[in-house]
Length: 85
Image (cartoon, rainbow, N blue to C red):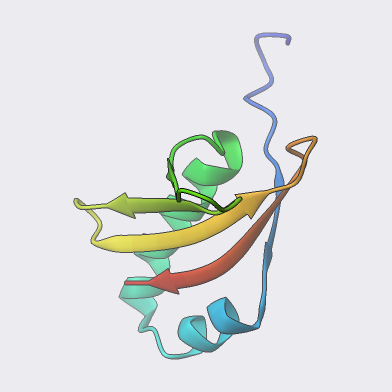
C-alpha cells in the first residue's frame, strides 16, 4: 500500500432491522454511529465474535454505540444487522 493511501475499507450495507433503528436516531446519535461504522469498515475484526454464529458484536463505550454485523468471506462487504446509540 502506498503511503498516500489509507487502509482499504469494506463496503457497508445496512439490512432492515438496522435501517429501522437508524431512522429512530437523532443527528448526534447518527454521527456517533457513523464513526463506529467507519472503524468497522476499516477493521472488521473489531467486534467480538458471537459464539455459534457469523455475527460480531462491536460496542464502543466512549461513543455509547453498539453494532451487530457480519463480514463476507473475502472481507469486502460488511453487513450491519443491528445498531443502537
